[in-house]
Length: 334
Image (cartoon, rainbow, N blue to C red; front, side, top):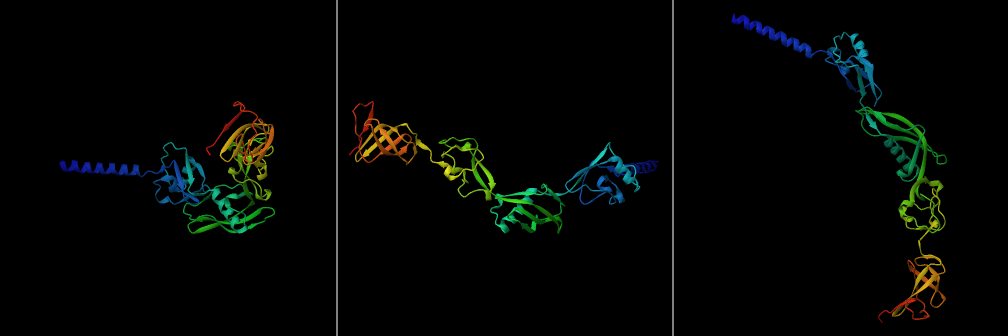
């Protein structure tokens, strides 16, 4: 009796194991799949598809692309290969992504720019602006591909700026494919312009100066190409936005304005005297200008040494009075 019971128990256990194994092996639709290659196979979309797993049923999306396939279309395709009873778990569409490696458009542009720079003397790569006949997009290649794009041939017309290049792009392991690109290349230079109208005598601040790229062929040799050559300098004449700044457009800032009240500094050996004066001219540091000595009523020549200060070193002042409210005198130790 006991042996019969044990035998029956073993049989039931074996049947249960078989049922579970059958349940575990049931073909099941995937919700998404990543495909390598041109073909989508049954096993890419259905788990536990058995001996038909390698059978092709659809074409893959393009490299770098994602598409969807309806569950009904998948079931219809596999039914032709005697695969039935597929569990869908309520999935209505399968998302299919083509595996790939991306080559950014910037990488391709850099390769072409380097070839133009080295073969046609267009200057630094960063100064070459490329305009392709067709908009450059990211290039997608097989994930197994290795290497980077390289230029195998390039022509350039200096007058029109047109170029025609042949590139090799990595396709798959050990293989490359040819791509032809064309467009225009312009050698540029960075120049300084102003962001607003600057009146004559106005001093340029950091926010007033904009560095902009212009075609090198259109720019003269006297243009300002560095920000520090413009900031804190004064406009000789009115400056307009968008026009490249030239060296002759700027000067050192005036420290003395015409008709401004200034301090005249007289220096002779052992003594220094300061007197109030009125500038007949404006000027920057180091400029020689005429100043009316308000004490002596004489016009003298002096050198601007600072804001509102003019040095007269070729003589001593003629004092009109000793009124301290009208002049200031200081004697240095002898």
